[in-house]
Image (cartoon, rainbow, N blue to C red; front, side, top):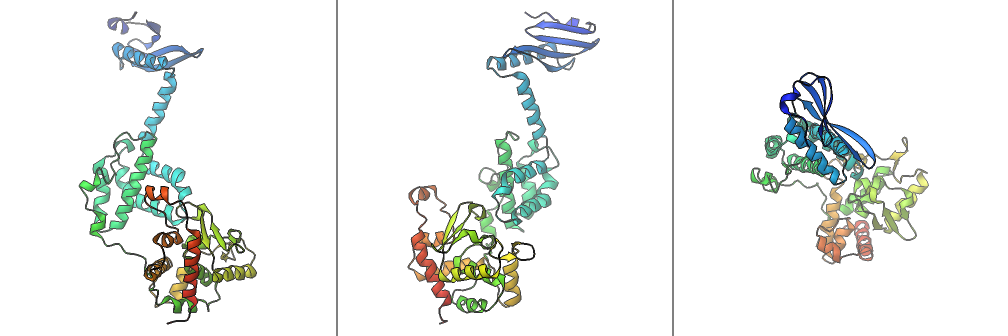
Length: 393
């Protein structure tokens, strides 16, 4: 079948010579040439390079020919497959920071409800990961590189390090799905890092959001009602509905059905990316109606100069300037509600969780508990309002 011999190749003059089975060598200069494979597939003629001579020996060229023919038998175009591998190789040779940017831009950006999330991701990657992981091609990153990134901050900035580890794991998992990384994920906690790094939950006490004890919130809420500020009205809605800051600030009048007493928060504004219905108490309805009379913007709590929502720090700034002696955060009022509800001892556990838009962590529980317990949540939210506006004592 084969026509060419090793000894004659270095003596061939300029021209194209057939070895058999579609394998050719094109001699460009004596002793130098290019191997090619010519074939027909789906009634179309193709020719592809198999490497240069003498770098690729005759026996190697024949091995490559056999490999390409196996692809043809599977109705796979060898030329298309070669281009796919070339593209794959380009991706694998990119730097970690390029893959991370692609993951953030194409996968994560649409999931975040808080604009600070992207900033935090990029900041930790730029500060801690990029200087180390960009020293080599992405495909060559290994377990030791990940440990080198995390170890210096693992005990001094444990929460930052823990989040960075999770981010690295997700970025590399993304690359594995794309076939840009073909080894085990070196940022996996269970398979790798848990064997060399201490448990983050045992070396650092979690700092929860500062919150107000529920015995003190009545007085605070009454003082808040005396302030004629958009940020004060927004904070009252945060407290009354137990919603997150961003959910209240991004709220629009069209989301509120005051007749049915329901606030439907669209999925894109929710942390869990799932639409959520909030029962409305009398106080909330009064505030929404009041804000309708105050302005004609789409957002309930607007920055009237920019026709945008109030800034994310507006309510926190209100706490710091009007209540400087209080050491609380806006998010902490969710903890105040949770403590009050638990100590009341008359509400189901899941009613309390769903009032805060928490999701069930267990897949089995999700399969059996299909209700959002909305009617029970009407009761607890009305009771919470009564507690807030009742006389102190």
